[in-house]
Length: 334
Ligand SMILES: Nc1ncnc2c1ncn2[C@@H]1O[C@H](COP(=O)(O)OP(=O)(O)OP(=O)(O)O)[C@@H](O)[C@H]1O
Ligand SMILES: [Mg+2]
Image 1 (cartoon, rainbow, N blue to C red):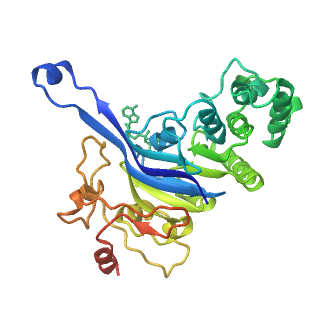
Image 2 (image 1 turned 180 degrees about the horizontal axis):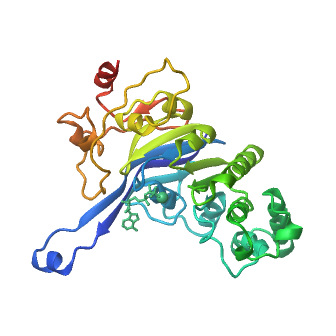
């Protein structure tokens, strides 16, 4: 059963040209195509990981799904119904059902609120329960995320460590009893020594409460551990999708192969061809219509810049890559 579905979702930002370009030279505006025709479906209790270099559109995707940013094109469906243009109770219900865990536990908490009030803020805004029940649930949630409410409920964010603040962020999301959690790099601002604890907490909560997750990270070893399926993005496009372990062990797309190339394989007999990628990641400003990795891809042919491959990304779909030269690459690598 599909819980959340992104259907050919695009987000383009218009770059405002300077006065001379706009008025005198009459240049048309340029667009940053941050996300391009991205389709994903997340199943019940599934954890879908998204990986890719900085600027590939991971946070933009999260913002669109959480309703903070309107897509330029495409649709987002929650339990089969489009969320675009929702009004009244329906939008309230969606806001409760889909919760974000933010990257920065320092910026995402209101510094003037006590911990218990931070957790209670969402339920109060949406009037989910009466005042007493909201208070009780918020205290219980603090206990559940490893912050005993007797000790932590009255504290302000500046009286908490980074890991404790991220636990408050997790409590604020989970107190809403969401069906989907969107975690955008929830560990990257934390000290390495406390990441494992927060990751364990997220895993535990997922197992206990059975929500689905969209989990964004640069770190493939974390995603290999937590995600059921993995989506690899490059400059706004989906490059590869499949069961996380399979994508990491047996990447198909030249980009994924390069991304994963640095991760050592425990089996000394195992060999994989790592493409030799040149150049730097660029900005997706007015890109050509085809594969955005083509300018850096050692296997690209003349048609790649015009060939956009849409993958079948429904819940539980098999391992696929958005590349029309996979057979040639396999032959070259063996
Ligand atoms: N509001 C905006 N206006 C213009 N361009 C934007 C805006 N937000 C994001 N972008 C651009 O869209 C692209 C994708 O950005 P996004 O933040 O989604 O990347 P990301 O994959 O989350 O990167 P990171 O790993 O660094 O967090 C980038 O080129 C970025 O500069
Ligand atoms: Mg980001």
